[in-house]
Image (cartoon, rainbow, N blue to C red):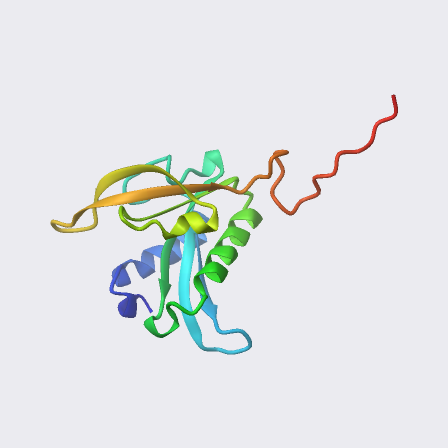
Length: 159
């Protein structure tokens, strides 16, 4: 799958080690009720590339959506919201409170999924590829400080 993506195929063995260390979780996404893969994605709890704690920091309960990929034939068919939703659920199950994601600086599509831009920086992706990158984040907590979906009832108190 990473060969089809064109990025990071050589990193897969390292990802297995990181999964064992519980600093990365990866998922392969399938068509409902089938064994046909649609794509993949994961969450890093450490920014292994740049050590940027604003991107991923296990102590701050912040993870980063990484290695997000959809096969071309499934792009534009409504699968991305489901992939992101599963990543959020994985993050929630890991006890994370914030999720980040990044892409090319002109990519603004993640805002419609509740992410908000918090910085733009030039990053090197190997060789002379210094690209302007947009970093976005999303809180996984509701207004009352609980993970969204958890009980947020306030008990009535007798005066």
